[in-house]
Amino acid sequence: MSNTYRGPSFYWYDFETFGLHRRKDRPAQFAGMRTDMAFNPVSQGEVLYAKPSTDYLPKPESCLVTGITPQECQAKGMAESEFAGEIWSKFNQPETISIGYNTLGFDDEVSRFLFWRNFLDPYSHQWKNGCSRWDIFPLICAVWALRGNGIQWPLWKDVDPNNQERDGVCFKLEYLSQANGITHTHAHDALSDVEATLGLAKLIQQTEPRLWQWALDNRTKAAVKAAVEKGPVVWVSPKFGQKHGFIRLASMISINAQKTNEVFMWDLMHDPEKLARMSAAELKSRLLVRRDSLSEGVEPLPVYRLLVNSSPFVCSALKVVTPERAEKFGLDLDVARQNHAKLQAILPMLQGALLEFSENQEKPMPSDVDYGLYDGGFASREDASSMDVVRRSSPERLADLTATRSIHFEDERLNTLLFRFRARNWPDTLTAKEAQAWRAFCQARLMDGQDDALTIADFFDEIDRLQENSWDNEAHQAVLEALYEWGEQLGEYCAS
Image (cartoon, rainbow, N blue to C red):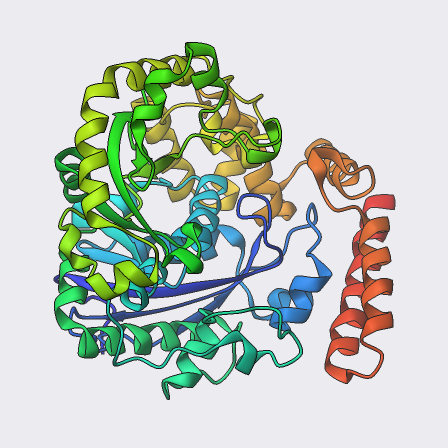
């Protein structure tokens, strides 16, 4: 097997992280495996670890879930710059589809912010050189909702006997793979999750080959946009809930004027004629708001955001929903078609309200640069060139370029990131003044909670709480003891 495979391929991947915040928490472990389009491996499965930095504390509960400690990452890992570069190169190999289970809901943003912190293009793996991304999770929801008779669907009441109040099918990867005889030796181990996701994809392709191929061919931004512009569509998304089959029969209203990859959609199980009886103020007050923000008895309008560039499952053929499935999930295709026709007459009014809504959206306050990828535009040509210099320079050369002010970015976010990039990856190259500034930054985060960081005090409190609930679990106690030692080590560094 070779890592230089040429031609269209899947790169199956998974992150294990030190927390659940996609932008702020750091990756601990990564695993990936490349296959051809027929699922034949063309590279060995690989596992990478990232060395932790001194400005960040892991979430103890996440460490209990994965069993990965910062000491293990320190011993097995590589500097985050190298870690990020290895992953970026895998994702950006020409004609690669980076793919996983719930990757667009979590892992893809983890990787995007990883690339951002390390001066790598955060978006190129989505479009450049024939590369793209995909997610098996929405597809498996669509398979269950629309077809799926050849797949075993585990029930929550069977996988979690202690929680009999939770109803329906459990879509957790570990239980889906177990129910269908797919090898999954260790949930929350990145390579094991990759292998299980690959096995699940094979099962879908074998049991529902036409649906698999259709979803693969129609996952692109262009295909999704064409479908919603044609309308109406069957839109399957986990966010719609299992009770409704994860399905909305929907019709496009307009494109968000501020975010051109975002489309506003109307749920066609609701009659749009009621809009004609609403005042402009009432209409605006009920657009894209939380239910609990409205008066009792007042419902938000059934308008939803669809991201055309996130490979959603969107099909313009309503007949993909069989009469049996429509009845099961409370859908009426004839009503949907009638409401789609009604909507066309009311569109100008609704589009005007949504345009005003888009234009009046307050821009969020800029966040700390570590989390500020979306606070500015794309890198200028000059900044992109300087980013390339950063990536190609040795740690020593980068220190020289900084000392002589030979490298500077138009985007001030990148100038701030450059200092942190050097401090996290090669602290030995910092001058005495820079080392002092870095320690002060770590103190502000870990002692004072700057940027909403987990403090050492809260870290120890969380360990104490978890120890009380894990006194009879030796593995958990070992992880918590290691975390306590790590906290003491960072505390000594900050106090020195």
